[in-house]
Length: 69
Ligand SMILES: [Zn+2]
Image (tube, rainbow, N blue to C red; front, side, top):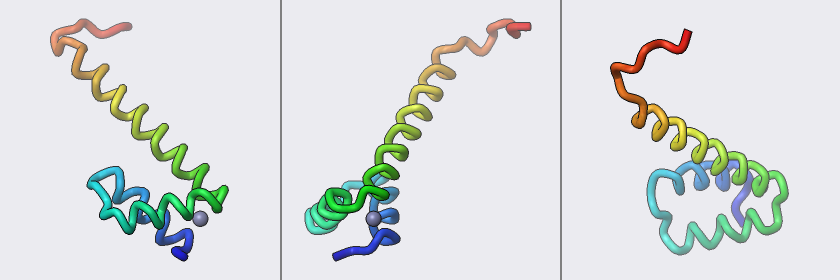
């Protein structure tokens, strides 16, 4: 069984690359039984979504837009 430190590392790895089946399964198993890591994972994916939306919003803004103030 992996420990929380390994799980956290795999979670951030998972954001950047596809995990091999064995690692993905072990991580899934760990988050099933570990509330702390489950919560952490939710926060991680929430933060990542928020970042991506922010980037998308910035991209949609024309560079010549006048300052708001
Ligand atoms: Zn854990």
